[in-house]
Length: 285
Image (cartoon, one colour):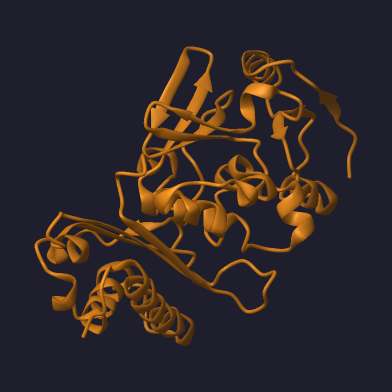
């Protein structure tokens, strides 16, 4: 590990200023990704800007109808939150990743900025339609996941940009959210994941179904066509096996026929079926 300067700003604005003043600087919060890169010398920033101790960047609160989670909020904190409705699934995802040391130190914002495709946070925020709040020298902007993540992997953040919070939609946005994943060992990152979010009309008709695939692709992909085809159906009319096949075709077509790709296709199909069965309100055929 090479020597570096360690700076501790008092607030987000000062952190942005330090990032702009020190080209090549990196932010550090939980350090679960960055510290390993420093140790292995795959990252050698001259300056680390610590986000620990900045109150405005941590914690869980509401803002109007949105649930706002600070970027430096740890998975452990999030897993303990008593959240209403479908938002309880956010805490469940946070409590079911990696192991206790990672959940204790790792942060939601750190995972999103690392943008490792296999991290659950990427598929979750995309799958439920969360928005990402970014502070820069010219002010705050709020981005959709497709604006935040680059299509081939990584993020679109510019030097000096700072992710400050994740804004999850209101409890009325979805009736149910189911997140399914497959990992080789309990503490491993996912090989494939699927998030299914469902909203129904008062008569039970499906008003919106969003199916999002993560981990098996460079950036989470929403199966827009497949989800739209379910609108207007009664839950009992949904053929979960056919939907699973459609999601695989829409998201993974053209990615080759190698054994690894075929394995991913089978995983995504199985996870899609599980997520649908959990999220849809009544037993399906």
